[in-house]
Image 1 (tube, rainbow, N blue to C red):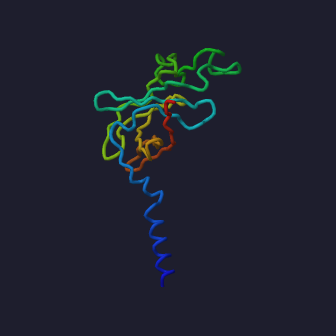
Image 2: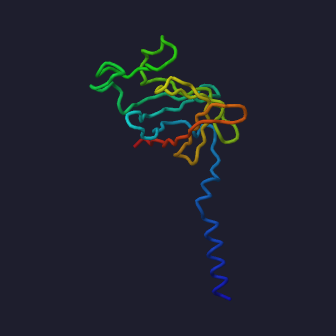
Image 3: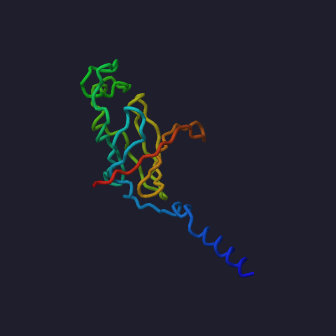
Length: 164
């Protein structure tokens, strides 16, 4: 009987201390502020600074692993800064990617940042977007289009960059 009680105690302790407690993280509105490293996707990895204007959250590219066109580029002059060449607005195609505000208008609501938009300079399209902090250092970025009541899109994970 003692052994059974010990086993039951041990099992109950395992359930009390589980990774599920990470799901208990309740973010505050400004927890999203800071610098985030995007997923490593070839030469498009970047650092995004999320900042606040009034009660809305925005993001801009502050670093690119490859900020200039390589020597073998067909998209732009070698050695020149990468530009927003896929933008549907021709007058914006010469603006540099570095410094580009690619996220805007997010509102904090019930633990998430919603109703924002994210721009993809790789295809020149803007998508609806929501941000969900999984913990203090990991954010899920979900860009999507709505088709009726269905959200079609993709998500990616970004990691907070800490100043050392």
